[in-house]
Amino acid sequence: MKILVGVTGCIALYKVAELVSSLRKSGNELKIVMTQSAQRLVSKDLFSAVGNCEVYTDSDAFEIKNGFIPHTELSKWPDVLVIAPATANTIAKIAHGIADNLLTMICLAYSGDKKLLVPAMNYRMYENAATQSNLQVLRDRGWWVLEPSIGHLACGEFGKGRYPENEIVQEAIEILGSEKLLRGMKLLVTAGPTWESIDPVRIISNRSSGKMGYEIAKVAVRLGASVTLISGPTCLKTPHFVDEVVKVESAQQMFDAVIQRLEQMNAVIMAAAVADYTPVSASESKIKKDSQQLSISLKKTIDILKHIGEQKKDKILVGFAVETDFLEEYAKEKLVKKNLDMIVANKVQAMGSDQNDVIIFKKDGTVKRVGPDEKSRIALAILSELAELWNRS
Image 1 (tube, rainbow, N blue to C red):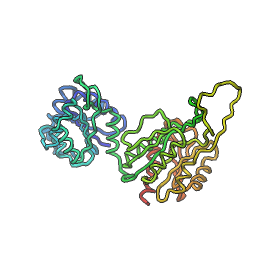
Image 2 (cartoon, rainbow, N blue to C red; image 1 turned 45 degrees about the vertical axis):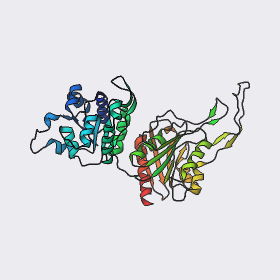
Image 3 (spheres, helix red, strand yellow; image 1 turned 180 degrees about the vertical axis):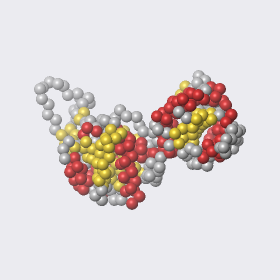
Image 4 (cartoon, helix red, strand yellow; image 1 turned 90 degrees about the vertical axis):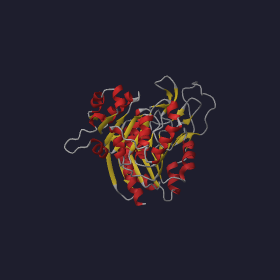
């Protein structure tokens, strides 16, 4: 992806150096434009070094060489235009069409629709009616304005105006730069294990980390879907920009959460490892370790995937299969038995890992093998297959 980052004179620009470094490491091609105020705080050499890229300043604005006019050529170059941090002054200039430096000239000439603004300033400057009016003007013109965080500011005050975490900014850039294969889709994703209580302390669970389901939710947002994530207990950070995150514990709670939202969905991906059995009754107090053996009576949990398959109508339903033996045979049997449109077969060894190695079976008989690879790329492969089904329907 080609990303042009405009850096303005806010003390938070030192964080943008980290953003530029991370974008570079992710394989993106960068160009940086710094305002005069930004250069008073940080040397352009820093950004050139961490981004391994060209850095342009106001002194380059009229350096026309071999027909290369900086502001017009740079405005045509990027896939995504990012202003980070964006000061109140630069925001006002862009909103009112003022082009008195190289960065604002580029913004005025930029005709693309992938443009991100990351405001950072004192909270009173941010909340000022003039700034809020300018931000609304820019939203109406197609800019994605990332809301600042609330916290301690460089001036020593506390409020809304803090530069957001770089992982949020980078994810916004990824969303802007991704092809919208799932535009218009309302997608429900389940992830993680369930906990079935034995007593207030002990549970029955499994080795699922939730990583695959969380990556699916994250990548689906990038591809344009409106995503609801229903998650069992995990240690993972909630993916940014999902519409709704619902935290549950037991299989019954997951069932209730899924059914409550099912009607509004176009597709469901059941990546959660839902417990097959739960104790008939849970002890209200901790069971003491008094005997050599302990017997616990178990009963089957409701089969969420089967239940959806029986009433899904025109919804696209995707399941997962994890087996130690005869994985492919079991997955194909489950595809038919539970009335799925697609099933993802993966090995037990993938549970808890950052990588996966899957076989995707579709109802129409097609088969695709993916991996071993990072779960983010496995998620993209799964969602690309979902997009194909979505475009057929």
